[in-house]
Image (cartoon, rainbow, N blue to C red):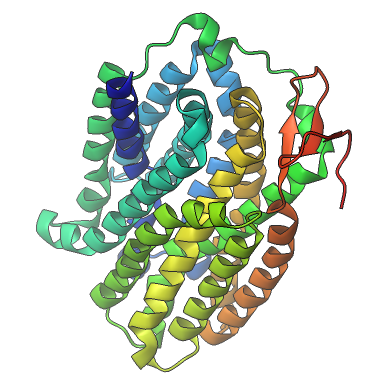
Length: 410
């Protein structure tokens, strides 16, 4: 049993490594793409938005796909689609960069929605802590994509080859997953569990609180993935330095991604931890985009700690706010679908702002204002509430007590 769990955890980490390079590897090359491929700032905004948008559109389809073919096979299909998208976006044909980015985003949306439910099913007692480990793998993959993108371009001779090279990592994950994925009986599979009640989740305020927190904090993350190097270049950094600044920031996410769920367990609920990571994010953005250039590295560290912790806690909420794996999968699809669709507006909006001559400092103030709004949803989503349908009716109860409430209470 222990060996099986260890194999599953290793597979979860390997899959997680693949769910960020598709996006973070493009950002350091945006200036090059604008010069070589003739992309305008608005077109570059579309390029950074497409993966996030299709991630959001595909996420709600994950429970349906799992119901049809099983969660394990659905994740295999997602990894295959990711590999295909990564290859397509580097081909020398018009429009394939956008097409491949969209396919990659859809694959990430499917895989990212399936994994929390699989974790909840395989290791329910440690689901929130393992979500931190999975988030750490995502952050490491993002850091590799950001830091190696420019060096791979120089080593392989073209930006197309650099972008396509990440398909090898996806291929390795696909092969290992197919060989070692959990072999669960049909009766225990997420695919066999009834899906009734998914739409009822939308009638619960708790679902919306978690979704809006997920959406806003994800918007911050994808703005950083898509635009931070470009904004830093506008401030005077060279291309490689800007890419490594983002890579260092993402590497710092490793520490908070792993530790945030542990720290959140120390409090009565998750609200203090959520507010702490959002404050770190705001301070990091201000240091990088408003403060003098000498604040580069403290800003990168704080931004990384804030974003790694906020994303890890957002995913932890998917398992902490649900009573079983089925509800976790349904909430994951709804929250990630809606949240990432909201998040897609962020990178596109920054592209439009830059197109109209808005400065990096002004953009930073707008993002800080958005983080203040996000703090309000964090206070609502971080309370000890739990969605439960074990009685046959979807209810929300205080997870610290035995009483069950038929509706959300303040």
